[in-house]
Length: 275
Image (cartoon, rainbow, N blue to C red; front, top):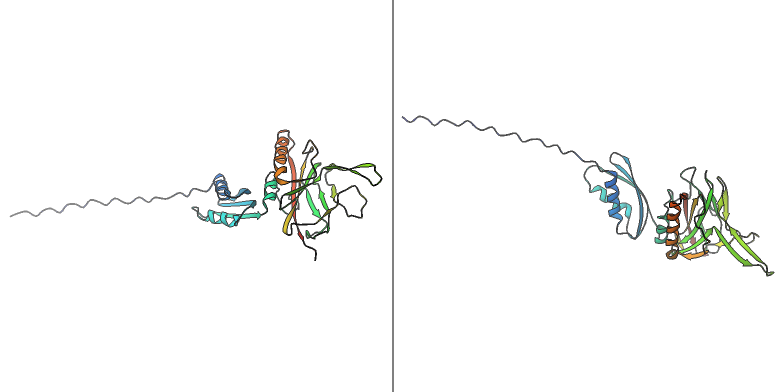
């Protein structure tokens, strides 16, 4: 008689270990690198990225170029692992504006100060809309700091006009010489007015609205430094291509000399053809 073959004892099936993936939170440095990568193809961009919560970030700034940078950034962050939220406050603008503002980026693009130390810019047309030939006057008000103003007018085609400081020599009708001087010095809380009405008998330039026409094709940019930003007088009218390296060098040199831009602000305005 053949004895039955014993049934082998089954080998226990090992339990599959449970692997818990620890979600790695996106760091601020990683977020900034992602923003820089998305904006890398643009001719100009300044984006200040900050963390506003565990997985919440805010990207604020401006750019020049084609496309919708804000949407591109939001789409890029949606592709990342985890529930990451990106809030954007990003304005598109002409290239000359972007290049100049990126040298000393303002915290606001409205002309209104963000803090008591900022400067305020207002215009004689509160809606900032002008017809060709209308008179333009600009008011710049210092916050709690005194110093020296550098005020620029820039249009979307790259024309740059130094509004302050300026010095211009001219001849009166009687043949005598005179000088129009706006040194840019301003005290805390003080307001200076740039420009005048043609009927006002003041030694100030007369500014009038003109081309380019279209929404926000003109910019007034003001910076405040403790000492004058430039060591030499600047020509009153120039172009952005020439002015940009000069302004960049002046800002860098003044930073090294402990004379940084301590406040700045900007407004944009619109000119339309006469009706």
